[in-house]
Length: 114
Image 1 (tube, rainbow, N blue to C red):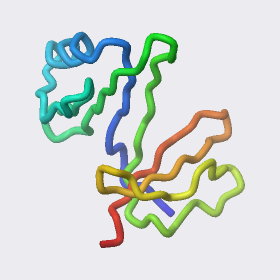
Image 2 (spheres, rainbow, N blue to C red; image 1 turned 60 degrees about the vertical axis):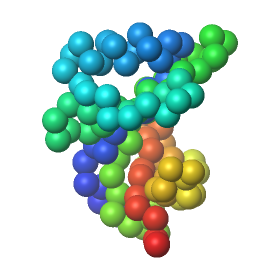
Image 3 (cartoon, rainbow, N blue to C red; image 1 turned 45 degrees about the horizontal axis):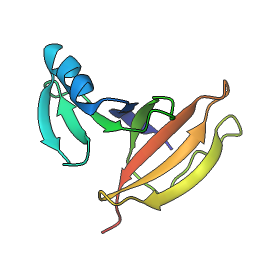
Image 4 (cartoon, rainbow, N blue to C red; image 1 turned 45 degrees about the vertical axis):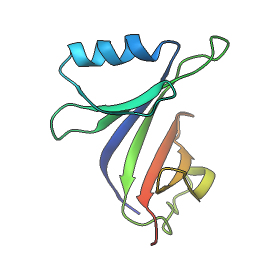
């Protein structure tokens, strides 16, 4: 199974407004805001950045989301550990999580079957 490049960066933050302004200062445009301290920004045709606010007791994270063509095809190589198989998301995609050889987690995002 090959991926098709980086789809997005998923970031968590303690302050949605400050994080959104930071990316807007760097040339990103707000595509939408969810109304509950999260939203999506994009710079040109590149990957989007989705930012979600988390409570102060959670450490902010960065996740790289790789675009996958087919949610049914997970990597069959032993160097890629499947942490969570593909599952439907509430925002209309299917996502899986894999772990690379250095322990880093990667998200694979594929279109839904329908």
